[in-house]
Length: 242
Image (cartoon, rainbow, N blue to C red; front, side, top):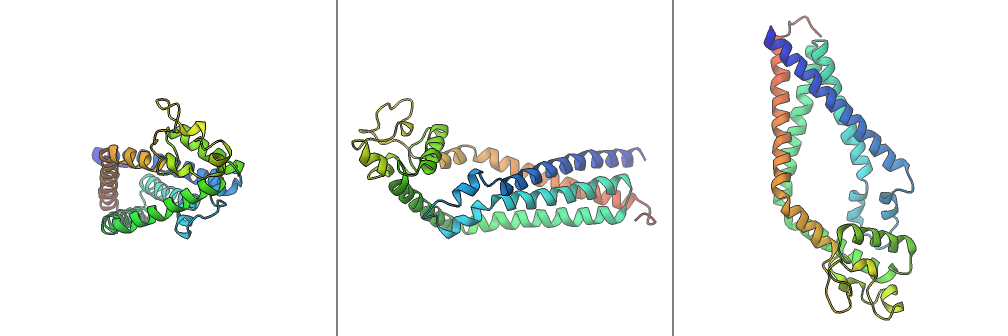
């Protein structure tokens, strides 16, 4: 009986946290879609963006979907344990199992179709470079967005500083690169090639790949534990509970 109460308490606490996290993510997703001045909505208006990128720009919908899913999971797990409802616990187990299977399938797809992802990044890169060459220094919103990105990541352009050659800014400022393009160690970019933002982001992901894999494995372990605990409670609850 002590073990049953312990599992029940842990189930309530764990899923209560999941419910609150889901509500927070849902709120962020709704805010992203409602706020017309958000960066994501602005990026959708940038010209020369390939159609494939539209799926990435719909991250607000993704956050809403994830938030709703977490709210449902948290509600079923928490209430199922508190009310000792076999029906809720079974639904909780099925949903978590489906999520786990989807994650495994997604990982397999990413590994199998990695060359396609590289091709997509190349398409996005060409559009980003064209966007710089056509609008940087001429369209204030796009110029400000690139300046903010370069200042934050300490990078220059998408691939490197050569992306700015023949841009409106470059041509109107005596063929010089923008100040935001230059890092702290390179004060003048005119005679040096500065690393772009895409290589920096890619390097950041590669440097933290172990942490990313660890987090993914940790989430998978928590899902397995949640399924085991929910089934343990399901089996211990009397058949009359609903």
